[in-house]
Length: 127
Image (cartoon, rainbow, N blue to C red; front, side, top):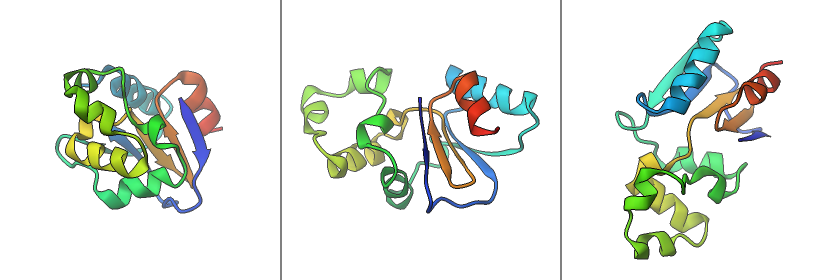
């Protein structure tokens, strides 16, 4: 789980990015509802991230923290595609081609960005 200050992120509402059917995203959404945090949810399958969004996130996070190398999508990639991810530019291209590779959930709120979910991370995030 990663949390950081991101001074260029919008300070409006809480936005949660992920996949509707992802267990970790479901846990995060449940935590947010239980703690009465109103969110806008963006499903990567229905609304894939664009280059601008990925580059904004990557100004504040290392590219390898955004790529889920433990998931099904990564395992299904051919070896050449996996080995081609060597820097931020190649990671962005891979994430644009395969949005389900993005580690989830990604949470934006008040100039902060968090990747992943745990009770502790979210408690600290909203304290």
